[in-house]
Image (cartoon, rainbow over the protein chains, first blue to last red):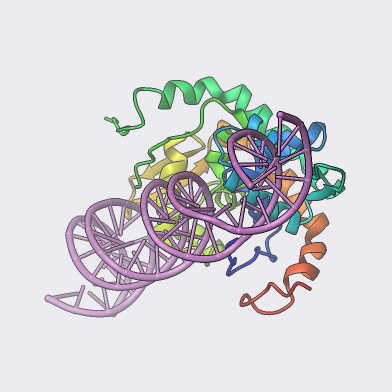
Length: 125
Length: 125
DNA sequence: GCAAGTACCGAAAAATGATTCGGGTACTGA
DNA sequence: TCAGTACCCGAATCATTTTTCGGTACTTGC
């Protein structure tokens, strides 16, 4: 895990909240966990674009931030599970609002950015 | 401006929304513009931690994404102003929710991460 | 002319974030 | 004991973002 030099911005509530979920996968992970705990392999199955390694790292940070809880089931074979904590669950309204906004406005950005391949955009004037 | 290889993730509404405001300063800029247009120098005055260069780059992206509009006043001396568009304004509820969450939970992370200076944390066990 | 203010912008450096690679452990069932 | 599965991790590498540094251009006031 990276050693965050400036852990979170504690003086600005906005930046604090942002810093907890603005990585590439965290918000998706929180969203996927909304319906119940998932095991790492299951999470990878629902987010196949993220490598297991990334998910592992991000989950670790989420756990460290108290948004997700890890449970190890000692049965055989032992499994680990990640679930939202109450704190993590309290972020869901924000995530819902973002999903909502993205859904309402997706066609706008569709037209704007799906001109062609990732390559050049910037065809103004 | 950096040529985003993958402009925005168009297939996931959550990631789409995120991609528009997950940079270090964008959400702050949107928040600062809520009460009316600001000139670059004014914006720098209210966000002194961000260099004028960064603000410039971020504003440019915000304009390109349609969240902010730029107006050039041709008087002398010519001034430019940046204001929220309707689209940008429609993100404010999300930003409000984040400010809210951050305010409600700041003391939690205060205790957790303000052990000492930005330097080392990582004093587990 | 010259300093000071404002708005820009290019290029490189630095910092941060994400991904890949190559393992390691622990258990299973055969 | 061996392949198979799931989980975990360090380190290097790659990608992206942010910062730094410098510069252009224009206008105002001296």
